[in-house]
Amino acid sequence: MRVWGGRLLIGFAAIWASASQALPPEQSLVPVARPAVYTGGASIVPAAVQSASVQLAAIPNLRPELRPASPQVSAFAARPSDLPLLAPDISLMPYMRPKSLEQDVLFKKRKLRKSSVCGDIAIQGKAVGRVPGKIKACGVKDAVQITSISGVKLSRPSTMDCGTAIALNKWVDKSVKPTFKRRGPVVQLQVAAHYACRTRNNRKGARISEHGKGRAIDISGFVMADGEVVTVFEGWRKNPSQKQLKKIWRGACGPFGTVLGPNSDHFHRDHFHLDTARYRSGPYCR
Image (cartoon, rainbow, N blue to C red):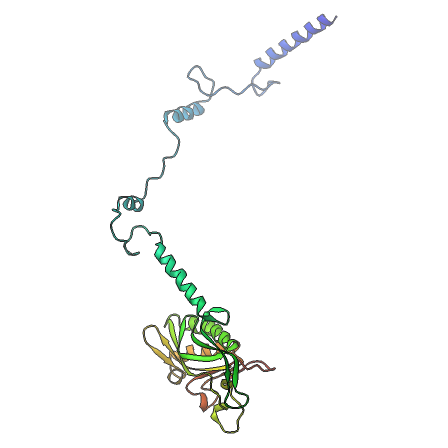
């Protein structure tokens, strides 16, 4: 019984297969297998597929070729080793930074750090300690003598406390240098006054000036790299210096507690007075 049933199943499957193959693909119950790609013999592959296959077979190598060496690399390889280094505007290829230059940069940075004060490498000078005053209320407890600020030299060593030195550095870095960037750069600040044990504006009976406490500095001019000097006295009311001087005068109001210029009074017609005195109402700028 089982043998008879198996024969019936085999026979039915054979009939089903022959009937399926006899029908076209759109009517066949069993999908016809996809024909093989062109192999050189008889093929039922469409003509477009055969043509593409033949074209691909005709190409010997489909891999991309390596990019040829650039003229710069070739010229560098052919360059004699005993020739001197070329300038950047002539050299076909930049050269690695020589070790001697790296050592010079590191040595310069180490030297700057050694001569810095107030914990900032941009503030160059030396510590002078306590500066006693000749009269009461004068003097500086921990004074420093500044020679340059943020890479800009002072026309003379100036004594002040670290709070004033830090404010001066911030003003030069954030306001003075950017303002004179195209015209300059600025290489020197002309110092009209720094520490001095005296009264305000040297008037008898007046209160002790912030200069007498090491918390003030007067700047009268700015020297550019080409030797040009922009003075407060001449430039405050003359273009193009007027706009730039007023910009840096406003820039000092914040880092310093008191900022006085030519518009304040006749005592300051030729310089900026900058000090770090603080007021409850905020900076006093005139």
